[in-house]
Length: 238
Image 1 (cartoon, rainbow, N blue to C red):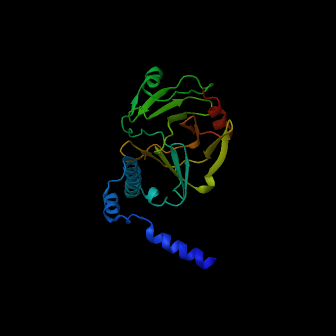
Image 2 (image 1 turned 60 degrees about the vertical axis):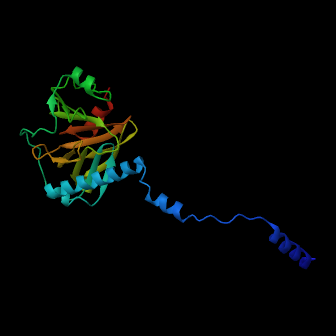
Image 3 (image 1 turned 135 degrees about the horizontal axis):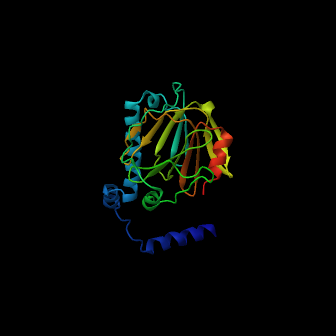
């Protein structure tokens, strides 16, 4: 029976009209020559920009050259854990960052693309500054603990600030249940502008800093504060 079935199938095969397999060589080569999609271009461009920014930072700053070791990202802030030189905050005048200028609170609210939040118990800010086309708002407040600086900025894909400190000085904490980072010593800070150029803030050396992100906005609370005091200020932002 098996032999009969095999004979029948062979005979059927000779009568079937099977189309000839097409030559796909030209079609495959044409697809290989096609340009990548615009989305792929954006991915490649972003990767190249990040490499260029890192190379620039490494060229201008010994701290950055030594800091490609361990990296923590929260919102728009990258924290490089390494061994920086001990630094102390100084009251000297900062070189301005790109587009940095003083504004009123109302002007800041109009220009920012995100809602501006203020701490509940620190009163009105002594200064309000917009940076780099209103990408960042930086406010200084007086308090019983000395000057407190609060920076707010869009915590999107591109990091805006890079910090360099010891791994032992970086602590995982929470602000009203939101993951946050507490850096409990002064540390060098670099700003990454719209063109991917990093600016080393030689005069402005950050104090202890609390960093967290909420609703797509990154917050930095900085000053001569304890961890508890910084978290208390952060949780009062309205």
